[in-house]
Length: 116
Image (tube, rainbow, N blue to C red; front, side, top):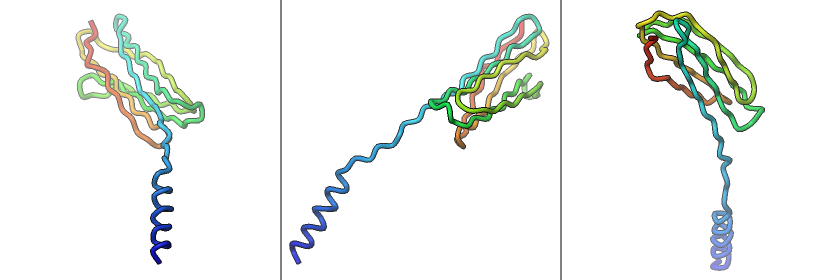
């Protein structure tokens, strides 16, 4: 009986000693907002570590709390977006991006910037 208990605990110790490695995944969302006169340049990139990663992205441009415009894009692997929108000098704008990468949600907001 003692041998069976000892054998059980020996096997248990060996099983617990086997390392289990979780695969580290890296995903990053980057946004950029700049102005050229009264044109806002809006860009967002979702960086993934695999070309097979499923990505969907929504990008929104706000003037204060008011949504000026929005765009949607989807694809596989790292996904980049760039477009422009008409803005008003003297107003402050923010660019927000929301991405879902393989079911995991990410969001990023640019700092508030004023069109000069």
